[in-house]
Image (cartoon, rainbow, N blue to C red):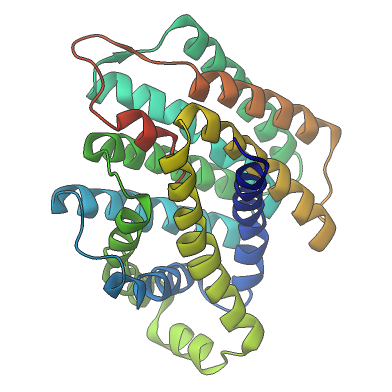
Amino acid sequence: MRPLHIALAALVAAVWGVNFVVIELGLAHFPPLLFSALRFLVAALPAVFLVGRPTVAWKYVVGVGLALGVAKFGLLFIGMDRGMPAGLSSLVLQVQTVFTALFAALALSERPGRTRVLGMGIALAGIGVAAVDEGAGGPVLAFVLVIAAAACWGVSNVITRKAAPRDSLNFMVWVSTVPIVPLLGLSLLFEGWDRDTEALAALDWPGAGTVVYVAWISTVFGFAAWGFLLRHHPASSVAPFTLLVPVFGMSSAALLLGEPVSPLRWCAAALLVGGVALTSLARPRPAVAPPLPGAEQAERMPA
């Protein structure tokens, strides 16, 4: 990769890592489900008018929109709202790679090789260490919600592999249109009209800035840049940069939010990042048929 493209890949990882800190700040202004709905509303409009028609079947757009937008981000935002630290969330969420490999084995008949199985075991050990660390001083339910969010991300990754989108920005913008109404409905149902309208009435520049960041910088810019890199380089060259996301997430949370990083958390980070590296970079062994064209690129694409 050219030095400029390496810098761009590192910048995207930094944007996605800092995104967890911005989510934490945004949750001080909005209820979690409303905040998630606003993220997708602002990301989709007016971008939906600039990217053209969807390049994959609508069933894949809707499937990923529900699994990723409603389930994954809904659970993540609720988990963080209930006390899951931003830095730890950025780390724990990476276990989605293990869920992706497991679901791909079930749905796509991919047999994980020994390297992948080893990586999955190491990553799960990291989750165990993180659970011990969080259980000693944090809300267990919030931790479980983020794990569930990672599982939903794994489901969306398998659907994305089936769709094999050639244009990641086009795909992500159209996916962003799907969760808006369901999330708004869930917010009204569980968070209430009064709480939602109060948050919107109290909207200030810092609150609006968090929405703009998670929508346009993290989603639109992040996926536009990521798609550009995947069009110019093999996925195997671009994918390793996603391992920097929890590094930037934990570092920015420590610097900007004052989140402590205990020795156990460092140990969990080393195990998780190492396990994810083995799991995501090892090639799966197809049991029935070779991967779909573009499937490898789709799997490596962060969500």
